[in-house]
Image 1: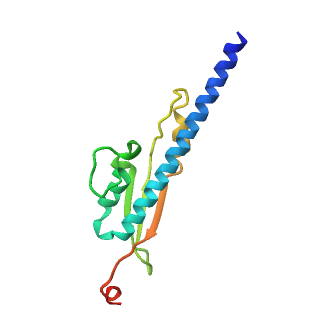
Image 2 (image 1 turned 180 degrees about the horizontal axis):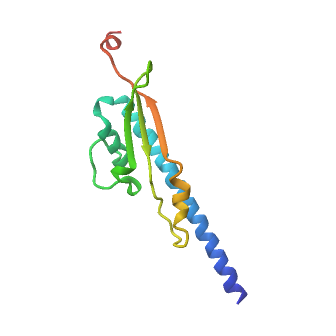
Image 3 (image 1 turned 45 degrees about the horizontal axis):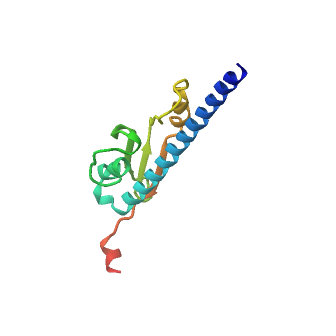
Length: 135
């Protein structure tokens, strides 16, 4: 009887560790995907916001078939911002992402760990001008 009670607690803790690890892995994967997409977008600003969104979703500027970590286009916000007296900036953000969980008894865990902290990356654009090309 004691073994059954201990195993119940042990497996609950084990599934908790697995779920927490999966949330952390998903977050780090999204950070890296957004970072690489922003880098690509700053070097290819002429491609536009849709190509950067596709880089986040599919890993390629063209629309693919299977998205990364089951993201949807609504989860990816891409904007080109021009602040006053500053260079144009590419800003990419992932919002409302739900990480998949193994344990069914805490469905709000991924929501509370991921949604308050959207993945957000910004970088100044690299635009080649005619004067820079001549030099």
